[in-house]
Length: 305
Image (cartoon, rainbow, N blue to C red; front, top):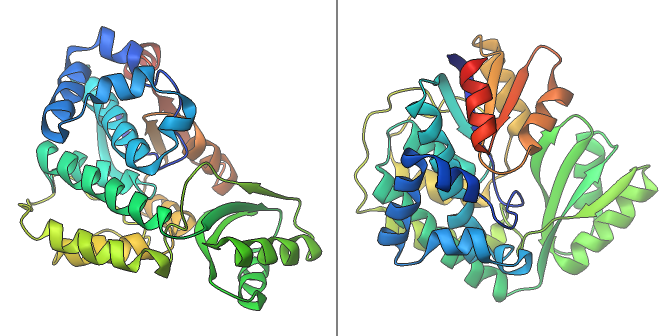
């Protein structure tokens, strides 16, 4: 069975016992968890299956957990004959996409995500930053609210019509939330992440990640990958530089999906924990059908569709 997009979720999708049923039922998935534990020098299966929600919400844990679960789901789908024309990942999910597309090896992907989580946790711990989803406004209204607030706050996740995430220093984010509500926002929801991600506050962590990535082997892609940074197909000329830019740039998800659809991709599967991206898809276009694959039952259903 072939689908258009392989979509991989980002931070916020983590939950207790994530991936356990898949680990117990799929040899292909189990190999990914075991490889991640070996390379990361961390019992990733135990982290995913036994950690509290509070522990999983820590960036240093959530990134490697979501990456591993998503990649395990992807390998389980491949194992039963599911294929894709292209891939894309939301924020952290772009790293899973880099492995799925063959640009990075599984081992290098694990090393990179483990280091990314550590660096971003350190950055988050060094400042009082936060993120919030603004619902019910046009993008321009949210951008204006951020521009009017004192301090560092930016629109960072262009998710779908009527939903844009902002991030920055907590006082500035709180001021921007007030401005958004005054402009008519329906709701402002704090996100389960521990820092001001995709902003200039991540610049030092991004610089260190770029240095770490210099030694990675980059391979030719086996399928197109659409990147968060521009919403366009990724042309890999300098991957470390791209990863640095990616950490500090907004996630242009609406544009990415629209560009994929313009290229003929009208089906997809959200691979890994949660159903966030499938939800975005419904709001972006009625012509885009996205299924979810997290459990063994999901994998069987997607394969049998």
